[in-house]
Amino acid sequence: MLSDSHHYFHQAADVLGLSKEVRKIFLAPQRSVKVEINIESSEGGLKSYTGFRVQHNSSRGPMKGGLRYHPSMDEDHATALANLMTWKTAVVDVPFGGAKGGIDCDPHQMSKHDLNLVTRAFVTQMKDVIGPTRDIPAPDVNTNAEVMSWIMDEYSKYEGFSPAVVTGKPLELFGSEGREEATGRGVMNVLAEALSDQKKTFDEITVAIQGFGNVGSNAARLIAEQGATIIAVADHTGGVSKPEGLDIAALIQWVTANGGVKGFPDGEPFEGLDIITWQADVLIPAALEGAITEDNANEVKATIIVEGANAPTTPKAHEILIERGILVIPDILANAGGVTVSYFEWAQNIQHYRWEIDRINSELGKVMRKAYREVQAIAKEKDIDLRTAAFVLAIRRVGKAALYRHHIETEINFD
Ligand code: NAD
Image (cartoon, rainbow, N blue to C red; front, side, top):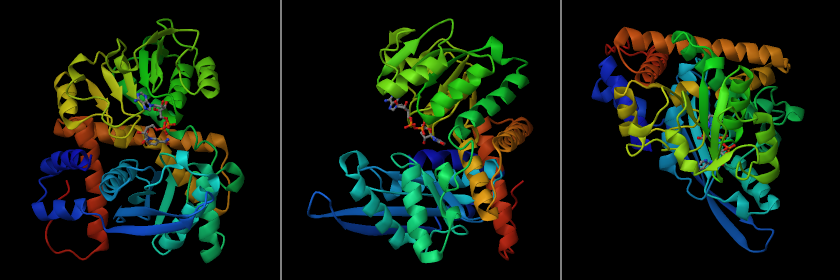
């Protein structure tokens, strides 16, 4: 995965003509912290875990990125995802750098008591490197608003009341309106821009979506509200389709009650993996990394792909899609709505003030549309795909900020 994000970085660095030395500086994380976490388990006995926080780049502000609790969590994974966060925050121009972290634990096998202890021990070990002006964690795989509340509480014991140390908190604990649906809303916003470029409207398109969790279900709901027909949805339990359009509100209710789309009565079941090659105008991968590969990229029927998930397309598949003339709206642009509203949450916490939902949604829309336009303009000017253009924009912003901050006499041109 690290090599995939590096691959896209190098493509953009080639466009900018960056030297080997400059690339090395950009790719290496500024700091990587590894800590041992030992707790006395509620089941009896001692348990040990390893926690990571990779802080990739802080040129444009405090570092920002999720905290993932998963047995496969390691430094390599955190480094790749921290890199992506640096570029993502720069593409949407929120004043953050990139970070990512996690603990190699499996919350599904742990008591809440142990999860709480592990989280608090992690904060105790990391308190000197995180903070509202240093590095601001957020939920990621297997972490949620409750875990963020514990982090805020533990950190506040050392530093005083500090809601801005994490985002993705519950509303009652200074979370933000609109955060829950922000990534799906951002997906809808960038799709609206792509459609308007193609002189199309939502009511004339069909959409297939992989993943019906936070990103997939909110994107489905908001895109359907605009008038599009969502004809197929798949998740880890299988797929369900309806050519006239699935009833998204009913499907959300079904998934909440049954844990997946399988068995939804108002649609035809299908083998989940077929979603990638579904006959639809738009495909939204919003589940897994590596969902579109060189094995299925040639069979994709959609003409627009909006990457709701992080890294759903392998570099080889991306090459095939671009050669086939498919418009790919890349993850670091398409799913940046989440980190954008996280920025709004942080800004509200710093101000000790609450924004109303209309303001959140309107400002998010502005940020996403502006980012899309800027990426699109670079793609046009340099005759490159949107992913490479997004990386060019991001590297330019991070690079110029770094140049202004440091006294560097070596001439480096980011234009
Ligand atoms: P989630 O856990 O809420 O939902 C994940 C969805 O993927 C579920 O519907 C699950 O059934 C489905 N899924 C899992 N395995 C699958 C499989 N083998 N085949 C098909 N579907 C499968 O997660 P989420 O928050 O919606 O995140 C989805 C993706 O979006 C991830 O890549 C995540 O990193 C990325 N992302 C999320 C946010 C956010 O704000 N939540 C922001 C940016 C990027």
